[in-house]
Image (tube, rainbow, N blue to C red; front, side, top):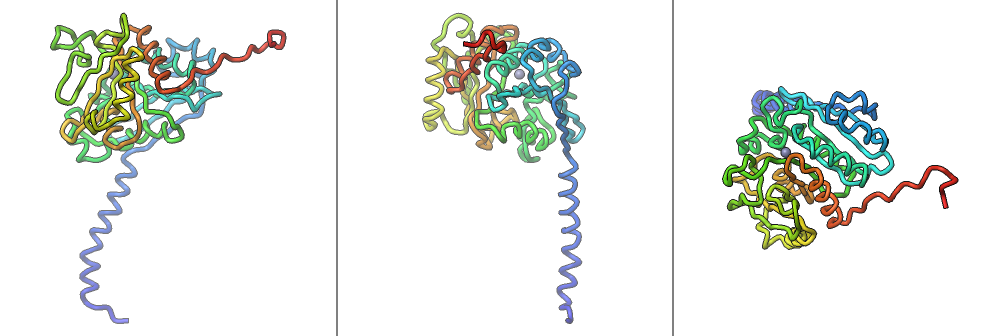
Amino acid sequence: MRRHPCDRWLLVLLMPLVTLLISCAADHRERSSMTLSQCIEPAHAKSPDIRRNLSDIERAGLCYRHQQVREGRFTWSFHILEHRQHPQGPFWILPHDNENTAFDVGVQAVIDYGGGLLAVDSGGQRHFLGQDPNRNFSRTNAEAKRCPGQRHPAPGYSQAVLDHYRSRRGPILALHNNLNGWTGNGGAGSISLERESPSLRAYPGQGSGRLRDEDNLVFVAGTRPLQSDPALKHRIKALNEAGLNVMHKQVSQANFDCSLSDYVSQHRLGEYYNIEAEHGDRHSQQQMVERLLAVLGIPRLSAERPSSPFLQP
Ligand SMILES: [Zn+2]
């Protein structure tokens, strides 16, 4: 068969494009890789957070796994704890390694409700190699460019974290700690019920004591204004009635910041709740976990049956 001369030119023109596409795909595949261990002895974990909670973790027989994600210049290290008998319970993300109260409360939540948690290891600091782990959620260059806190997109990191929800039906949950007040009222933090903005609206809870504190709040986000999001509006009302402060962010193209909350909203990945409490206020954060899960209808695990046959009825 004779080839039309144009075919050859077409081939000459297309070949570099095809080669480029193949190398881009290969490049994309190589850009991130992930390993996730089997359950290993929690006593072997290189983590002060695990060590601090070791007796509770061992007593409850939680499964400890170590996950590593390599992407660009980062090798991310995640500590995973899961309830062996009830792995389907609520699953918590803890992006900041300097928020110890959140970690301790997270361990107790896994023991009490099943499920699990993922904690980013940044050597005890908030940032890892200059990157805030909670400003690292993006899929594309275009998305990353919109976030002042992120220079390179991190699709591998984002996927690795959110893959833990793949076989779960519950909401995406996060735990954080913050500093007292905010700079606008003489405090040191950046999260506060008193710090509203055009995109942040505060909904004070009907609680008492420390639950009313400006730093103790449930953070929620959505892309719609609250008045056109009746389900979330209803949820906020229920959380307020349960005594919890709520802060709502309306996420837009302009204010998207590569945080987990914004990423989940932007890509419509499901319901999201982040329990923020002041550093050290374990009692309040614990109460907030219990009240949030009660509002969401997630039950506490029932007490184990006594192991001795002589004690059974
Ligand atoms: Zn945090």
